[in-house]
Image (cartoon, rainbow, N blue to C red; front, top):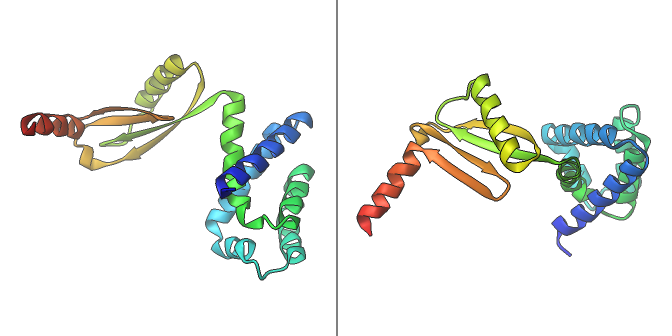
Length: 178
């Protein structure tokens, strides 16, 4: 079974548990924090992925780092994953949990790549448009890519709208070469 499928199943199990315990928002916050810690600490990632490091040491490290901060079900979940030899997918499972949480709460992630940074007003308008078209709450991420020359490219899920000047020029160039 692929690592993604395994991480997805563990994340779904944690989501179901957190819903049952009425702690879904708390668990989400813990998972976001865990992701940020792993992104900033490559040594911790290496320890979790290393099959030579014993499971009890991995559990001790996770417990020392997060026991005072995390919901008990998250700590128990980490322990189960480590004991089952799945510590190497804790990062992927955490990311998959956030995706599943957003789906459960009806939140979509939208990415806007623009030639310059969007103003707060433009972000508000774009967020409202996406919310209206999808019927879901929107988390908007803005990235700047000066090669677009002007305009923007919006990606929501598997849909993409290219309203960039470079995109229009590329279409025009393809039309001339056809």
